[in-house]
Image (cartoon, rainbow, N blue to C red):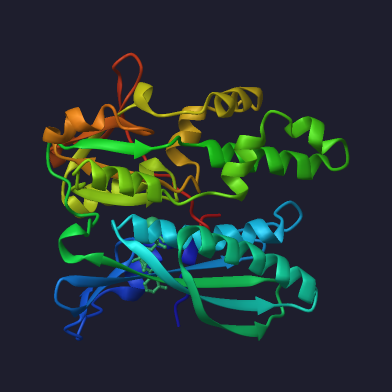
Length: 341
Ligand code: ADP
Ligand code: MG
């Protein structure tokens, strides 16, 4: 039998390959694979959203520098982020664990204190899960349910030509936080506190991200419904590509409009990295990327922590990054891909 390496397909290619031609047969299954969350309809007007995430030790987190409490918090929050990215409200999670003998009860208490804190802050109930022994360290899988009104749901496929492209917060900061942590891990020993001083925000962005519930609330209050939306877990280029592909459009992103944290830029320079490349391709910012009709421009301008970074174009234009001097580059999605070598 032939053998194809997974790396030849990559993560998205693999998902596409495995799930090709899957038919939804339940009348309640409105949207299956392909967005931040699945959408189900059990009652008129209301929708149920569902998303799941898998975190593996050594692939997604390194316990040498990630405290278990932070890990628990983050594992929950990244799921909430996917529900907000549909313009919904998270309501329940289940938590499944694979635990090796290396972990004590106290360790798992720490993990759960983080999960519980996230649930408390976001008003989500922990309603179940599964626990098993593991031969390979710690595995955490969280599934989250949420709800939304039918008319409120925002998919990835609704972007229209001339729509504004917006992002919340800043980009590339979580990646710079990771670089700092990795550098210190490799360096070993030394006075970590001194090295990290003044850079706490970068570490926080990596270790303890928040889901942008506040942005969803702001948009709602302003009467803005995005035409397409998703959260930025894999880097802006890759996420914009999803919206463009699914909406059948192109885009122009302006380099000088990318929201970048000043500290992150300083650290990038220190490490000889391009902060723009990090903003476009770094992972785990958990900000929201959304497109809005041009008529919302006046409302968007005064809004807190929302930045217009470009606009949607006709598909023929492709996906373009407009540089500081007006030069046009093709936007390439490097993304965050655990399957590339
Ligand atoms: P996100 O980064 O928003 O969590 P992913 O990139 O992980 O989304 O997944 C993209 C889509 O593919 C989602 O709809 C997800 O549910 C689906 N998906 C991912 N892995 C699998 C799988 N093994 N089987 C079926 N669907 C999957
Ligand atoms: Mg997502």
